[in-house]
Structure formats: structure tokens, C-alpha cells
Amino acid sequence: MAIKRISGRQELIVAHLTIGYADPTTYGTAEAAFDLPANAIIAGGDVLVGTAWNSATTATLKLGDAADDDRYTAAAIDLKTAGRTALTVTGLKYLTAGTLNALIAQTGAAATAGSARICIHYYVEGRAAFSQG
Image 1 (cartoon, rainbow, N blue to C red):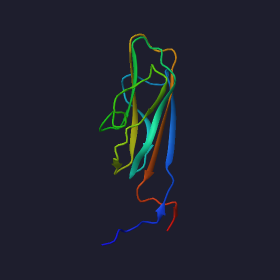
Image 2: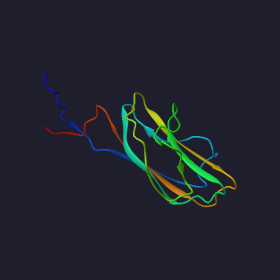
Image 3: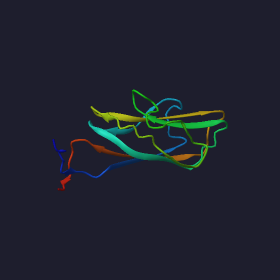
Image 4: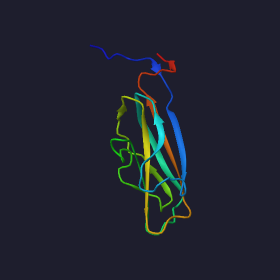
């Protein structure tokens, strides 16, 4: 049996969100960050801490969904350290539309500075924007 090629192609869809230290409604509670359509598969992404949080003890971020609050962050990302962290890609296909949630937590005196950008790359299985081959 020959491999069945599929000629449908699509670009990666990129979504990004910048979160500042004052944005979370409640630290320690997951909040909706991105809406995903049914059949979406995360193919990559990153978190870039541009301005480190200055909370007294810790400040962390996890990115996940309703079933697993840290599905895309192998370990909580340290928001007190500026830099880039690649997301952990799992290959999970969302069978129904869903939401990715950001959970930001901090301990000690609250931050008065800090900013991070979350960027996700995904495609939608079964969608085709053009064909090739």
C-alpha cells in the first residue's frame, strides 16, 4: 500500500499575548489566555520575559488547559529572570474548541514591575488554505 499524500497546506497560526505584573485578576488562579478552535495542535511557541518581575520571593508562569495547568511548560517559568523559554510541545489535538490558560503565581511582597510575552504557534488539522502537489 502506498502512502497517501495530502495536497492541502496551511500556514502556522501565531497568537501572542503580553502580560504585565498588574494584569492577573488573582495571582495563583489560571486565567484564559488564548482560544483554540477544534482540531488545533500546538506546534511551538515561547515565553519571553522582557522585564523581570520584582516580587520579593518568587514569580512563576505555567501555560496549560483545563485538564493540565502546565501542559506546555515542563517546569514553571521563572518570571524573576529575563529571557526566553520554549514551550513544551505535546502533540495534543484539541477535539473541541478550548482555551489555553496562564497561571501566574508569586510569593513575598507583590511585584511592582514585570512583563512577559507568550507566543503560540498552532495549526488546525483538516484545514487547507491552498494546495501543493
